[in-house]
Image (cartoon, rainbow, N blue to C red; front, side, top):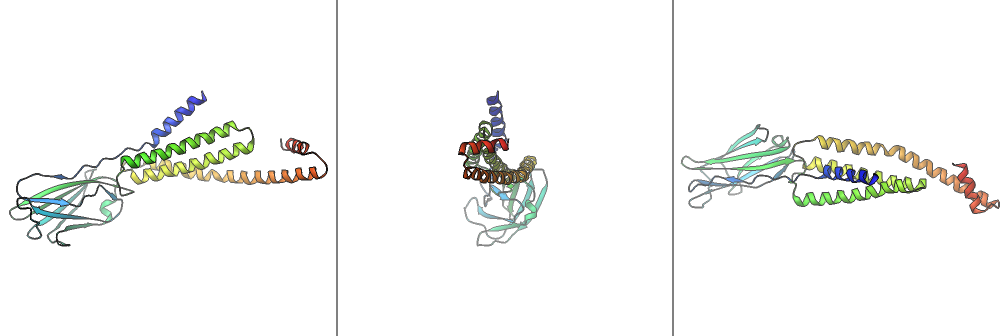
Length: 267
């Protein structure tokens, strides 16, 4: 029965730590045979509450020549909630070819998926494109490689945690139980901290699990205080016991008898 309970616990924990790999839509260009081709700098993720600049290169589709004057470019930025966050325009270039839009951090204060629509027009020709990206706490997209490495690390910690719990149950001596408990508690703190930081960094929507792992981390930290006090008390007891055993042996008592007497005293 205990093995079944452990298996259920492991399955629930692994399900809880399994992150979902995000997928950002690629740049979408409207294909035409004439007009302007607009190529923005690609970015799959942007750091939350951080300034960011978008640069565009504009080319004439029919000739392939870069367009550096005589047009006006526009940017409209939307959040997945439907909010129209930013509207801007520019008609001058920097760094020879760049039409730039410099957005401050207030435009990226919400987690989630964003859509940037770009349009450039002259009096006779035009072109447009759109760019999708996410905003999160790490400023990078959760890839399969990141997910696999994190899950592997958490699985390793989970195995160590279960072995430590097995030691708490299996050891008969108080010292062994206490040592295994310390190991298990430390691993629990490490695990909850990693889960808190991982979810806080990569999540783009639901922040409930971030709060849950954060609370569990701080609870486990505060729970160490009584264990520290108990550890100090146990060290004092064992130090006193050792001194008393030495004193009894100095008075001629055998080592086994001295240990038996001290064992009865602290039962």
